[in-house]
Amino acid sequence: MALTHEEQRERRAAMRDVMLSTRYIEHLGITAERWSEGGVRLRLPFAERLTNDGVVLHGGAVSSLVDTAGAAAVWAGHDFDKGVRAATVSMTVNYTGGGRGTDLFADAVCVRRGRDLSFAEIRVLDPDDRLIATGTLVYRIV
Image (cartoon, rainbow, N blue to C red; front, side, top):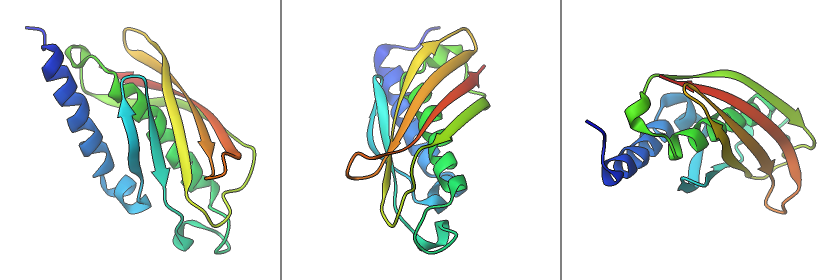
């Protein structure tokens, strides 16, 4: 039996809470600023422990934000009748700047939903809207 629109909405909201409470994502401090079927905005708060030198965020922390935001964009509009087992299939990150001593924001949208694979585009910005990184994510849910 197919889920109702309201049940789908409730599961999408629950997935937001599940994702953000996983140990790694919680350790990074990532929070949701916006979560809707049209896309998400996540925040990675600056923390000295996420840097190499106390100032510039480590590329791994930025790529974790890209991965999390891309997956979140897929989940935010996912049809839960199609499954709940998921994994990142591939990800590309292009670093265009450095997150220097400041929070970062990732804006992500799911640009295509296939039978099993979904494709997301991600932009990472600092509070002054300077581009820090771009990314693409292929995510599988079965």
